[in-house]
Length: 287
Image (cartoon, rainbow, N blue to C red; front, side, top):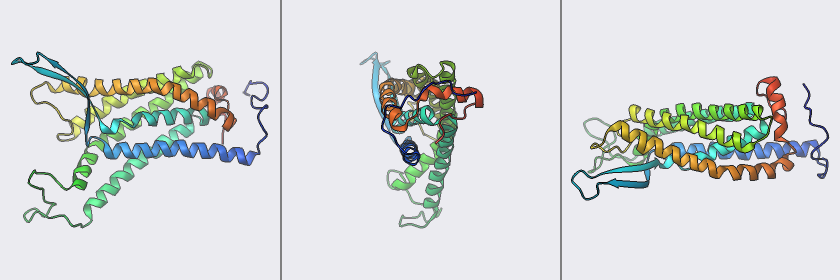
């Protein structure tokens, strides 16, 4: 099947050599992939080292049966919406295959972060050792040195992060191209928001539940309130609402980036669905 788009939509632009155009496309892809992977590394290290209290609703304030409803997100969640913006732009201009490849490299990066932290904890340092166990000694507040605290939190959350990350990112890429093929390349807002919002449900539920059940004291739960109520409302709902709002803010940004990159890359994203329909997701605009 040939692409039915007639004429050259970029014929009015100054001529550019094939080598320069290839360099442009590779440069933009490198920036998007680098931003994606760099953000991923930051959020995995920050993880659950701190929780941000978005807001709190106090019920029966001042009464003996007073209790509060807290909406909080882990600090690692803050840069997370950027990863979906990057994969959506890569999907839009470079196709499903490249977007999936970047997601796979992100998984390798997760593993690399764990390996570095693991080796860093094994090598000898200047910390005091417990004379009985031979392990790194804790201070008077029963805390480990900073590196080991971060290492413990990262180890505890990285499994949840990798499972949720893979499920969410592959879901994002799949749904993005599903809507693109269904709408024949139209309605960018639909595939951008639809893919991100669905994939972030997967991510939020997976990372919260796995973090809670696979780590010890990974989440700051109130012992006086039901665990499941806090998991669902305090962390899952709050996290998803934050990501939902970020996705709405993301919409004008992706329109802006597409408008700027379309003539710069000489790629018309609306034609990609023809190749997707023919070759199950292989991009029609290879670089």
